[in-house]
Image (tube, rainbow over all chains, first blue to last red):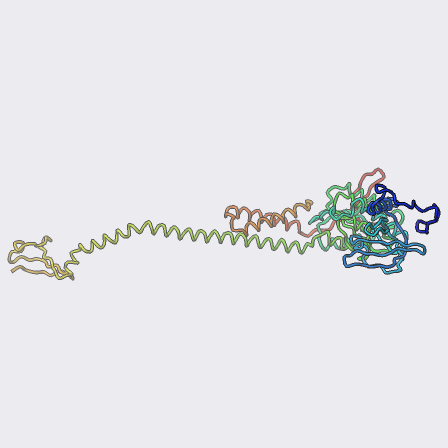
Length: 392
Length: 76
């Protein structure tokens, strides 16, 4: 066939004038769906370079734009999942590298490129493009998955440090360790951290870490430098070695603003080597304060416990008294009754009513006149005492 | 000096938390409370020992041509 599909067809290329019989006619959906499949299969995910035009960022977080060069254009869509990783919106006219899959938007039967990665070409060289390729590969293998990140040990005792033996990073790590947690042991596994041999050296050092016994944590990193200086930490093999560490890892490369791919693969990222130690080691003073607070809670807990037991004992004591009281109540009432009766029977009580008793010298009570012949001496007992008397 | 392991301090502090919580709860009987208290005191002592001043030890690990690892004190 000559000419483009969109050029007006010449006479000879016209399809038959009569519509085909019904079974050979495709529905639009069938047509577009077939086209979509063949478009997606044509290139698969592919990197393209072009200029952004008609850029529109929607509130949903999805971006719509065109990518064009002087001859052609393609409409693009970038879903929120991916736009979030780009950060700032892209201005019209920006030249970019885009990783995307061409497809057909079936509702409209239009060609679309579904873009996953967008990198402005300005200020990025091949190094950054390569870095992005590594990142995609790591992501594809699940190494950037947040769910595979391990938690760091609370009180690491032996920390492996993979860095240059004479760099600022190691010096900072030692200083901060002394300040925070002096009982830590640092096992330095030296490695070149920049230059052509750095990546291989880092991979070797990380393999050594995996052979060390009783290591709780690994810090890998270096101090600040130019992008090129830090590039070993974007190396795919280095990243895979970090992912393969047996112990949890902290990646600390360069300064605050630098993010290397090892940062994304490691279990934790720290902005600087000093920050890595802050992250790795608890503060001794804080921990001492915590221990102190546990000590006072312990003492207070026991005091409270014994106070509770004391109160319970006191309550038990009360109960004993009550029980004993109850036991005594019966006899006490009986005693009261007896004493009442005793009192009622007491002769003194009779005397109190005005009676008196005559007693003979031998103590016998004179009951009849014959007991007291004239001249007999006797005692008359009255309520307040005795009187000596004679019978006449 | 015996080499403390990270687990012991973590374990001591975690156990101490448990003990304190049990003592603070009302349903521990006195015998048990006293037992817990004694254990707590010895764990506290252990935790304090582990936190006692010590000097950061820095060592260097090198692999020789035969693949053997050598650990030496670091002269930084």
